[in-house]
Length: 491
Image (cartoon, rainbow, N blue to C red; front, side, top):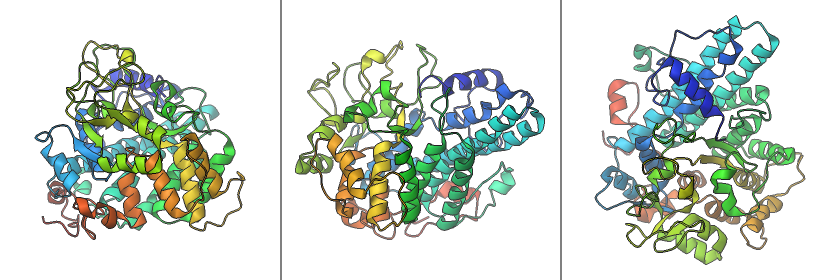
């Protein structure tokens, strides 16, 4: 994924505005200076939508806090005094004024805004482009932008439940009066976007290989289907992905997270980062890995130390004899990492997230820039296999194309991890998701959709009927009085 999308983005940023990494409001993209009759310009607004997904330094801290530190697999990390509002997430003491929660509201709506602009731009290209090939590109790019928009709303509905839907660029007045929609309406909207994309985007790209394709849309829709308990659709889509032969597990678990394998055969959806060989210009790096880098270590192998593996996760690995995944998932203070970097005893925390480890030999910058070349893995093929197993174990009745069973899918993941075969019961699948996808921003949401959050997270402060969703930010309710108060929270 690393060399492609961003190169076009950089060119677009040069000719249009200072930075397309900071899309803040609806309709903020350049409205003039673009020749809509030129096919080579068609991808530019889609490139900007991709850029809106990339986590800046601040976004990254908020993201890991809201998406993973609330789970039982991760602790806040860093130092006790650092990040007090992130500590609120770790202890479930946050409220509507928590800045991390509000930042995630803004972040995902910014992505939606950029996608809306890209979708509307396609209408302008369609009116101006005369070639059949250009029209086909317009159609594909529109579908691609809808995948990005669907991703944004999937996270918004998971995080906040009842949220407004903006399917076009809007005026400030319209934004300030938009009604919130119930979760089922949001899920229907996401399904429509992904169905539209599945119908028109290609199965793969010969250039710009980091772009989201038909299988990306299918995998994302399958993931959404799990939240709707639409087992038949989840099974149908994951079965087709398996049958396609386009994806496979890397032979070794650790290889799924290596920089050199980004955009590889195990990856269906990533958020891209690259230093593009630059040594000083921050465009267009992503701080996701840096935020989780070892705190207090020696440069350049250091970061802020957020989202560290919890003792509960370590005990879970040990209870299963899950040595391979434990070794990859944990960086341990005082040990030498496989590729030569050392976590010195000066590190603040005893453990760090090994899945975002990037060898410092890849850092070509003139300052501490640990992990800035790391892509965020959003959906891996292992997740597809486990989604298929879960849907089938929940009774999905479909005509299979892949020839797989739930047992086969589950055990393919286990075999790679060096574990013996087992039966695909729901409990076994739940445990396998935890082990395989640990620290990849799935655990909290899985517990909620399984109805197990109160049981598992209750000792950490989780309250049933309240903490399944985050509060709509107080600042947003002041801007838009049609937004409801989230039950269980004091405004």
